[in-house]
Length: 269
Image 1 (cartoon, helix red, strand yellow):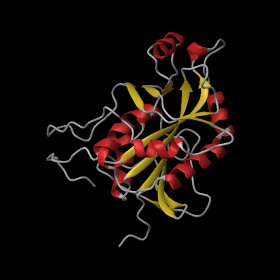
Image 2 (cartoon, helix red, strand yellow):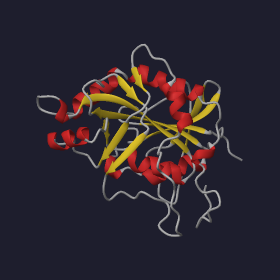
Image 3 (cartoon, helix red, strand yellow):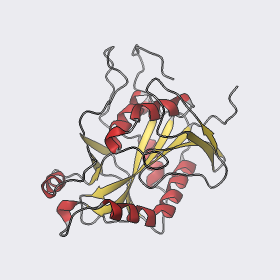
């Protein structure tokens, strides 16, 4: 018999977002077929609901974007009962009018990564719908949270690059020229793995900098990114708590149930 609450909601914290709960939380060690997640999963309470939390990069930022145990993280959350995930992350802006302090709720994703395991289905002819990579119900909940400190944008296209380096100016200008709004290093394959496990998923992106092609100077520096994220961390956490509280249902929505009528090669955890 499990000694911890069964969380249906989860938050995956990005760079600088290494804890979530003000009060005591239960920390659960989880083994998966893909190894251990980035850290033990913390289970606490938000607005009377059991919520799971895992720091995407580890408690001490041990994992770079291209070495993250994405599959283990998602499998661990699903196995604990999670069906809906908010995924806060740090992003660079490809738009001069979306400066630091902007929070965007992306509705589209472009994958520019390479070499990352990005599926649980290496066989069996399973192909998931991914035209709309984020859950509309979670996006609506996050976009509806009011913040005095942050400007919330209810949509946007996020391009995910391999990292760990930042973009060149030419790459940045190319991304912006395509009409994309945000650049990030961890949003893929996280989103598609959530979809494969039939978990609702929404990225919540905090702008920390204007990308290299948008401003003069020396380009993006990690120390500045972390400092800007830290400056906005408290109101950003408050926004995420508000989004968790605003979710009306805690089960997978119909749109994110993508395996109906499909024979899977294994049972989902």
